[in-house]
Image (tube, rainbow over all chains, first blue to last red):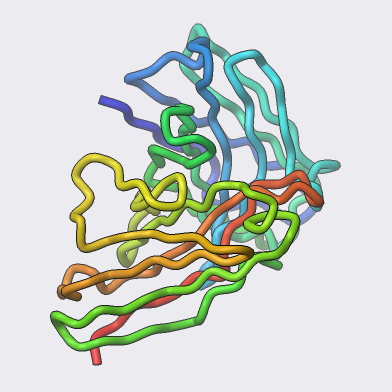
Amino acid sequence: QVTLKEFGPALVKPAQSLTLTCSFSGFSLSTTGMSVSWIRQPPGKALEWLALIDWDDDKFYSTSLKTRLTISKDTSKDQVVLTMTNMDPVDTATYYCALVTGATGTAFDYWGQGTLVTVSS
Amino acid sequence: QSVLTQPPSVSGAPGQRVTISCTGSSSNIGAGYDVHWYQQLPGTAPKLLVYGNTNRPSGVPDRFSGSKSGTSASLAITGLQAEDEADYYCQSYDSRLTDYVFGTGTMVTFL
């Protein structure tokens, strides 16, 4: 049974950095074809893809946000970490991590429940 | 801003058929990249509904069906039920942006 869960602060101040951790079970990120992505959703708005890391440690970032994002994985701990620098109130959103198994192509097969991050002083 | 455009809302009576369009361009849907669809019930995370343009994951009712043509894709819901009231998003890949991209989202409601 695949599960993913996001952990991180509920509130960050403008200009600070945000670090989110995705803890997962039921699969190994060292398995060929597996990838974990981060996706966010501002309140009442659409989904926005942020970053992806694959089994081979290849990393891919949103073109518009890549200068602010860093994604990494710790296979031994079954965790993926996303860091976003220079946070702004417009970054207020629910942040999701999601698994790409490869069995469905480029679809996000499983999602965590999401964690709401508010950026405010 | 999203590069895949969806109608903000569609509505139908219980039992009716509704369709949701997803309009892209030559750098995403028109370039041959797969389209996937997600259902997001109120207050919950998105759930994969259709993948690879037309395929349903195990457990998804066959009332949901996907199609793709040219630079657009569609999701059809036949026999609309109360539990189908949700937001629906399409998703693909864009080769110009080199990003995974989502649609603007569509809210499905009962008339």
